[in-house]
Length: 499
Picture 1 (cartoon, rainbow, N blue to C red):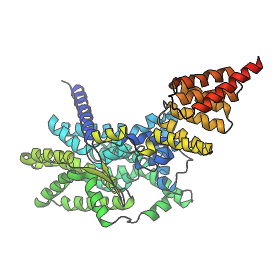
Picture 2 (spheres, rainbow, N blue to C red):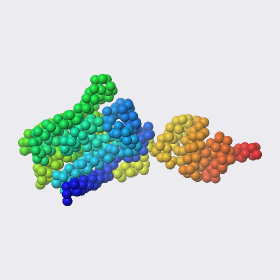
Picture 3 (cartoon, rainbow, N blue to C red):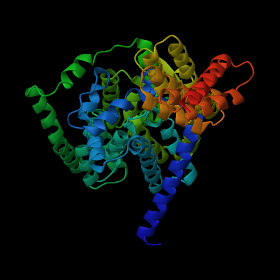
Picture 4 (tube, helix red, strand yellow):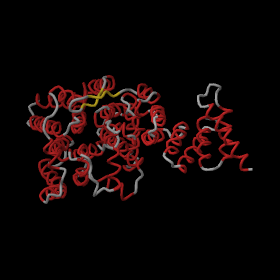
């Protein structure tokens, strides 16, 4: 088998392992996918799963001019994907799928790297599963429009790829997430450890060459950001730096530190313990830079567990080196960490609250029984009250939400026809009434409402047909039966007078 075929086969196996690892993680730690229904629903927009998505989609339409709200101001400099998406005219759904694609690329890269360095397929799957049960994956797969998977991909490329890929990562990744810049020194230290472990020629010279390449590639981003600040063209950085102060209680930092990697922390801690015991000088440097980088990223943002994802390259490198340093005990450690990360619960940790991550059966039940903010029936019933109270404008907003959640809800269209009718918008009322009858031809309220709209439009014959059909379909105790019967009699009288 020639080298090209071997490489192709390796990448195919790695992609398969990535899919298996992603599926395993998603079954155990399932995104709150029911919340995605509320993308255009104001009552649901505050949830982290949706909080950023609406603004990111607006940024996609105007990447260089969109002014985000204070809560999402950091996205104004994260321009790589908005600019590309705008240029390629990506639809919203495809754009929101990019973090998931990034997850598969990260896992595929990790699996391929491990296979290339002698891991068995089972070992590579276990290590990839460990990576897929850390915070970066949970955020990228659950919170819409969070591109953490792509900046993690940039970090991994910086540590494990060749000089050309290093330059590409340093050029592009800061425009995805500034965490890359904060984590670059750690990546360069880890890269040096990796090169030394693989027997790279002249590791000392390579160290300084790689640092120079990374610094040079990062220079355009630095000059643009500093220039914008100096020219007072940057409303984001100053406010963000001002907000970079510890805001969480100590326990939240401790929990966030743990939840970022969970049991995957065992790998880098074990590696550093082995290095320290062997009295290798680099162990002190790696430990110091790792602690400093994690601490800086924890302070840089309120989403604490998410910030610890920057340490994933250290986990991958530790697994690679532990296989060399402790081959006898390595498999036990690897499978133990993998099993513990799957068995133990996980949660998102922000500055002063946590959000548990549930398994698939729980989220499936949530989808079947959504919360009120995502339940079309809730909005329909609330709108019915507003219509009865003479406030059709308020009812209209609720019914728009119901239809956004379920475009096949005939009752929502029937009630929205009433709102439009009360507001004197007969054309809109007729369109909604027609749609309600089209969706559910025997729905009493839909037939009656359309009859009232047709009567207001002067279509007495059509109105009589609808009202008569409503009377036939309605149960005997239908509250509106007397009014409908009176309306039918009035329509017959009008038609008789016309003759």
